[in-house]
Length: 318
Image (cartoon, rainbow, N blue to C red; front, side, top):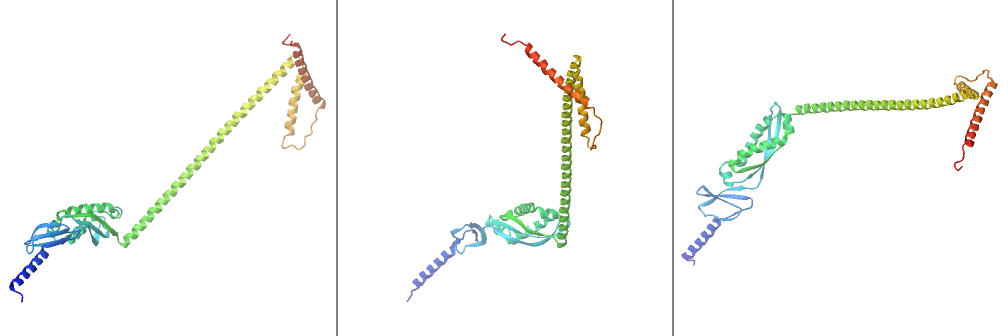
């Protein structure tokens, strides 16, 4: 039979085990617990094993200290240029101070969500539709700065706010599509006109260069022709001078040579005319033969004079 003392001991053991169980608290990683004594906050338990005073202290709030995400529901916003758009997004936040997050605000997630939605309407309502569609980074930065500043007293850090979708009305989307098509058609027409203009400019430059080169070629050819005529005139002048000298020395055959040369050149010009198929004209054969004989005599006299000069010069060794 169990005595009263044994029952008392068993009761004490049971109470001791119960008190130990109530006083030992294990906080998982990524969480923090607040401890309240008679309803008043006294301290925060970090991850690990902790002991509290049973029946006097109790766990007040269990807070997730990891980064969390809130889905911002879609809402309609009127922009500065009176365009109605539907916007939604996401908010990333992290609790940095468990005590302030537990006792400075009720329903932390709901408060953060409503604060974000109201600031979305404020920031995006002050912009034009074109700015909303083209400057999402600016919108995200402004929203994060405003909401983060507002949640600092709650011990919360807003790490990121992202606008997921901006949906204008269907008729506005169609108008934007027509406007974009018109702009692209305009740019295409401008580029085509600029291309044609550039082609005309290049063509004109090419024609100009070709004319310049042709003019330079004609100038060079004229210069060459003038030089050739000058050389020919010099040769003729020397020939006339030689003939004149021969005439002055009494050699009549030189005159016959000069006339015969001109006579032969005139015959060549008449024979080479393209509009003449047959030429019938009286020729004095004796005159031509005499001129040729004169040429032979002049050549003979020239060779005789050269031989005479050679024989009259004494050798260098004598």
